[in-house]
Amino acid sequence: MKTPRSWLAAACLAATALAANLPAHADDGAPRFPPAKAEELNADQKDAAGEVLKQSSAGLGGPYGMLIKTPELLRRYLMMTEYLRQKSSLPKRLSEMTILLEARLWDADYEWWAHYPLAQKAGVPEAMITDIREGRRPANMKEDEALVYDVVMETLRDRKLTDKTFQRATQVLGEQQVIDVVAIAGFYMMVSAVVIAGQVQPPAGQNPHQLPVLIKK
Image (cartoon, rainbow, N blue to C red; front, side, top):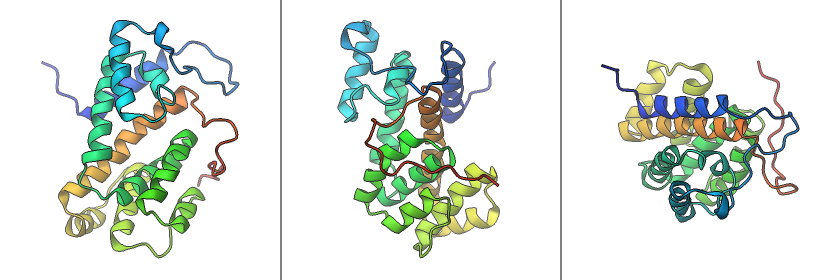
């Protein structure tokens, strides 16, 4: 009997499988999965595409050009997106901050481009966005923001969430919000894997806040 996998492990395995089966492609930066046209989709893909259009303002662009190839994966992806973006216990400000941190750690420029205006709208301070973009720990963070920063950075960058940070975060944010921070950060790692493997880039000339190349320590 197989041991059940967590949703994140399953999602990451599916993303890895998709990336492994990509056709050979020159490293010219062109998208490997352009937005799908309706006449190119089979019945199952059209059904999944209809679900995408209920949630996405970008149509079948971005990560959907790749995910539409596997409709069942796409449907489960949309279910996670709906919860993490619309129904999680986190305030939008902290949710979008989490996504920006993950996008910066993974150098996912499309993801940053898509969520930069959402973070602004949610109330993430511009100075904080700039610090995250340039790889600095933001100054003058509120207590909840500092804890979200520490949870995300320790979990994704250091790959170890310390007892001190976990205990403080659960005391201030509560268990449910800590779980949702970790889930959002983990899920958007999959999103980054898709946009990187698919060579998904922001529209030409529409990314004034492109992520700078950072020297990794």
